[in-house]
Length: 597
Image: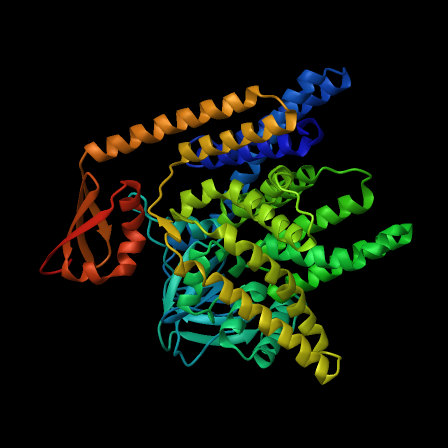
């Protein structure tokens, strides 16, 4: 199979180049010129090797070309991203003009929008710039901008604070990977709308208008608030109407990915449309109609969601799949998956650091590699049992390749995912197409049909919400405070590769390699745990508005802080939780002192 998936090797070397470019960005060497020169040199040498039919030399040079290409694209994107900030950091300005690029997102006490900063006012003149910012507006503000509005803001943009504590979430790096470098908090009276671009022909403006139209239809037809919040999160990508306990249910059941518009949602839409229009592929002309229809429907769904990057990536992935299905006589699913990943990373190398991108592609890879081996373990004769087992095997396959990264990012594992996922997937397979159908029937259909489709959407959303609430009534439904470092994650993925390859190649030796990898993993993890347990550590933490010092001893973490920090769960969760988890501490002991920093 590996020999039939050349794009797997292409993506591997290109990703290695992205990592290398990211690492060398901070070095004093002129990385842009170096990688461009190496790219041209290796391309020329590779062309010469190809001309004299030297396969080994051609392959080596092609791999080096991909390595340099990944590094070059990464450095170029970084230079473009940071061209504007240098200008803003040097200039002294009192206000700026920006164009709103997203719908207001509800937070606890604020509304948050993304905006493109187009110019700043320095003294008596305007200076043109090009950068993006995340603006926070008070939720009760008298002026709430909409997508496409030109706004004038009195104030100065700020860079997010760097992560100064061990294990702290790198919020600055997170925003940089999304192309956002600045933040600002807009107080009442500091914002003024000076114009609008809502009537232009920008596809982004169209998508926002379509998304708002869809939101209005869902709100009118879905009577249950919890069902409406679920539909809005799954189809429109906005979670502001989800209740806190509802989100908690999805987290503890291991199905929180359902709440984010991702590749899975696009894949479900793709599979339903493909099933309904599959008969068109019997004719040569019908194949083109099939391709055009699927691309059109996926494009409409992307517009409904507001064109977030996750949907753009997933839509491109599915379009690549359907093109391969229509025009290729035989195609490997993994090869097509790697091709779509290469195209996405070619235009946006920072997508590699997006958690949603990583988990989506790992889940798809798990399904392609492990679904058949898992499904073949049990072959029920009853059609209902067979369907349930297939969904369960699908869930296991996806979970198998995503759990190392899930532990690395989220430090918890839902033990009953295998029980809940089959029901959630089954309900989602009905819910997503039915919700899209609801949009169509509200345009031209009799009222009874609209009411029927709305009832189907309402009841399936209700059942999905009920199914994810079950694990909380079972013992040990969530294992928390799990910690893996990067080396341990690599060991787990290497072990999974050896297990899969031993099955595919029918070679027992690779099972021995997998066993050896597990032994090395266990020794490495145990030595780290013992070192942390027997080596007390003292840490002074940088927490705004608080004075915090911690000391670990065995399984206990002693925290000396001001009195207000003990009740500030948000500050603890953001600045200290990951650090406490990495130490393997099970008990927190607070020692509050009077006064605050």
